[in-house]
Length: 189
Length: 100
Length: 305
Image 1 (cartoon, chains in turn purple, green, brown):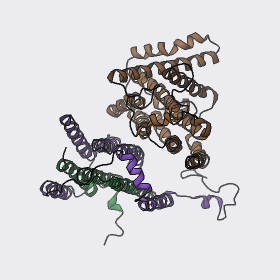
Image 2 (cartoon, each protein chain N blue to C red):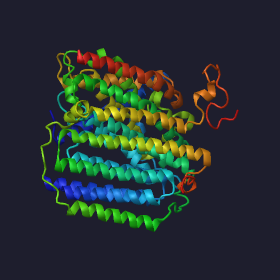
Image 3 (cartoon, each protein chain N blue to C red):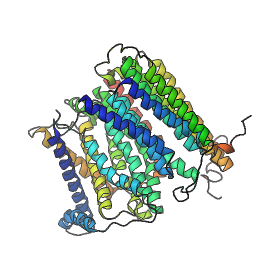
Image 4 (tube, chains in turn cyan, yellow, brown):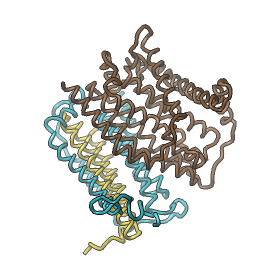
């Protein structure tokens, strides 16, 4: 059984790294985005192998969603189909490559050379339940910090990205009956 | 599947992400590099958790990393949209006003 | 109770049968509305399937075939993966401890797949359809997720089997009507069906379906019915007590309830107009989402008391 699991792990490992590399090799924006999604799904599946069922499935869920949205932004900002006109959009390629290989050698070397301590403690019977209890108990402060952070992100992202808020359209006290000017960017009026 | 192999795979993902984040010119591609780096971090954290100290509350760290990823995405897209609107460009090389 | 490989095969076949019944029912409704005999509508999906199987596949210059095929095949695969956690009476293919999250993750896959079908065709109408679906997805997904949370809180478990067991005394639909309706709407929305079918709207020549032909078209149409069927099965497990009912065995009740929900979801297409995704956004975020959150508050208070 463990031989099968090892095989699955290596397959997923190769898929995740290969599709990670593919992100920066393919010409098409859509393919790059979904290659990244495949990489995330593979990592999510590896988390399932490590018995992290909830986190693994959540990773897959979140990242597929993110990549679907990311695809839109990619195509919107590129404003063309690079599949039809291949071009290089990189700077300092050699330097980046050297640095990346250096980082890999240091990290992988560390992983292999360090004498890791023995395993301490045993996993809880139901990991999902224990995660829920941790969030709602001893680690509640972490989640209490994360939630206003996420809310602040929502507000900040909207403030940055929204070209004309409701105060622009409905006046300073929001009393205007009909919005002034274009309702959305691109409308001519 | 041992701790060493999991960490080596994570290191591979992380360094591919480093290459992308450093070499790409388009803002969204840089963000993809960052995402790949965080992807490696998630895998490494999961491996360390499972093989070294599978205490129940270690999983919370992974949730925090995923939350950090979403914050990075949301702010990255907001800044990219703003940049695109004000400069009609999506290249990092054209937004170097603050570099010394 | 989990079933072996033969059970998994049975589940797949059953999903196919239910999906064909759904298509036949939709055909019947269509035939009746046009004043034709009902029987001509029952068989219409079969003739259409036979026609599509014989039709030669069209393709377009510079179509992204790889991504297109992934999207086309994916819908059916995702529907099958959803059925993995849907119980039939006492049997489930795999009663995962995180079954609810699994179902949710699979319906997020539909975001990517529908957009890929639109993108891969390299045609303007199809791509607009794909974008419409993502715009709609931003509206329906959060209410859907929170609606899923209701039964999970009430049962105190993410395992679908536990959720069904928790409804022995009282079906969740009785005290979670809002969550029930929102979840049903979510099922209709992720199946690109009826009022939420703008992505395949006739005003853009069929949208994501515009360039599909032959087997590809058959797979996507079948995938939509399969998604609806899997969603209906999950509605039964979450809100309608699964297989509970008098006299007949549990699996019969599951099937009967699933078909009833499915018939209602299919019928919605003939009753309601298509909603524009940008209009949907305001309603979804300002009315539906707070309503579902209030429902969750109610559920939370009831569970604690």
